[in-house]
Amino acid sequence: MPRRSFLPDEPKKRRRRRFMIWESMCVLSANDGQCAYWCSRKAETMDHVIPFANGGSDDLDNLLPACRPCNYEKQGRDPVRWYIAKYMNEDWHGRGSLTSPGPGGEAGLRGRYLTFHEEILEGLDELEAVAAEIRNPARQAWFLYHFFHHKYDLGARNFFSAELCLHWSKDSIDKAREAGFPDPWSPEERARIDGHRAG
Image (cartoon, rainbow, N blue to C red; front, top):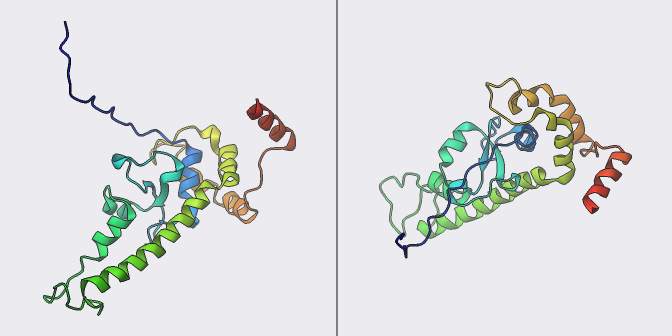
């Protein structure tokens, strides 16, 4: 007879899913193809805003375009903790104390924190704007329609990678962006899709 265990069941290990090329392109082309994390470099990878290992979702709602250096430097932190760790640890020039002025002339640690608090809120507004661009249903439908046939993104070494498809399709993506990502389906196709969803 098997022994009963009174220990809680181990949670099942979550696995990251593979993203289709249209999903990768939808994320990597957002923010004009630049890293969302304030460095202005070219986006090269998708970053989980709330890290997957910490319970963040593995959906487009939790992904932003990032350059590899920012993605590496963020290292399993959300943007707030990363920003604080990156910028609030500047050198206090040997004068560091609770009340001494910070390197930027702020009135002690409290003033420095309040300055960073405002910067973080502004940064989160910018990240939310990029996330809203990615979540735009018309934009997602456009990428799905045009790139679904390329299947899964297997990285830059694969002939059909999101990076190569973005390079080849830059002009058509720019035109679609200017036009507001028009509905790619014909009225007949759209009626059939909507009828199928209704059921």
